Image 1 (cartoon, rainbow, N blue to C red):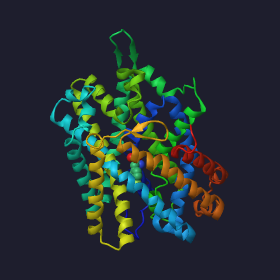
Image 2: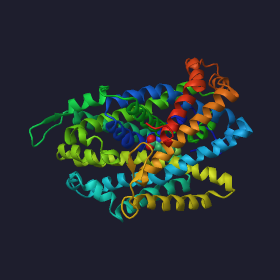
Image 3: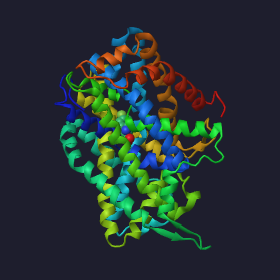
Image 4: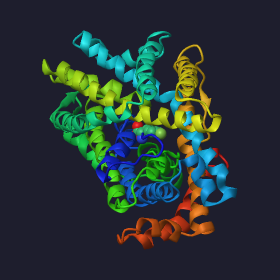
Length: 464
Ligand code: PFF
């Protein structure tokens, strides 16, 4: 992120920085496992519709609020209306919660990178490997520490811009790798002991074709909540971060066009990651294996790399390196948000705040790691499932807090100041806001109603 007072040099700088924050483990780890859990094609369809509607509305709102007020999220909402200052503070809770577990997942990536660096990765292929790794006491903490130390060092030195420069090389590299491995995955097939054969092309059809059989209202709401939580997390919206990015965007940049590019990029990477993971999960683990949850990519990818033979190891090293980099740029943006806002809140120096946020991130991440062994509990979630600490944090921030923040934001923009407050900002350079009608309708009527329903469902007030 930029130092206070400076601006992105142009729309490309802004799009790249925002995409660096948006594209991370949300796209490559979270999207495929949710999509597989929710049956493939139907989740994909719901997600794509949400991106084109809610994603566009929420991203436009965040970025326009930032550019119009020229303030970070903490101050921006109070600048719109004094009474709404609390909303800025509420958004700040989201990165505070996400920081507790983001570096734990970053650590898992570092672990797999190291496994392939040190060996041919055969050990990672066994079904129990990932579970025994995350439930061991020391190893996940060590790898999390490596990832967290790197993140904290970048934030402390303020060298994010230097890191973002590499995004121009790494991001296309990552996309090419994902496409290449996905195409290879489609050629795979597997025969079970009972003779059943499953092919990659069958897996592709599960990913792309929505299956409506047996769909109930309860099931649909579950999918909707999962897809919406994914949208928030992946686009980094409703958490103040895009408001802050928006405050650095120069007035002459065309907002509409930049927002479309960020959305397209973020969704494109998620879509391709789904194409990489879901068909191969189906081939190796069958339909039952698709519900594996957070462990999904760490169980299925080693099987694909093994099927590649000799080059599998090199491809695996390159893949986990690039995925680790994408995770790092996102983790840096989460931590930078915390550090920058706390510097302002507590009037402390960057060094002092880096230390404090570093300690906070470290302690909470250790607790999350221990949530798979000494602190292992099956927490009941309002949606009827049970979860460990990491998923509980994820649920509170993405399924509960973010719909609530979006509900309040839509009331503020749609009803208190009016949609024109945002649309005039988008149109400030004479740009025509083609979807102005859609924006105004959504922010006034659709967003509040849907967010209220999701909030009630996620808190358990409305029983599914
Ligand atoms: N959008 C990021 C991802 O998809 O991995 C996650 C993220 C980045 C969340 C920045 C929060 C944040 F402030």
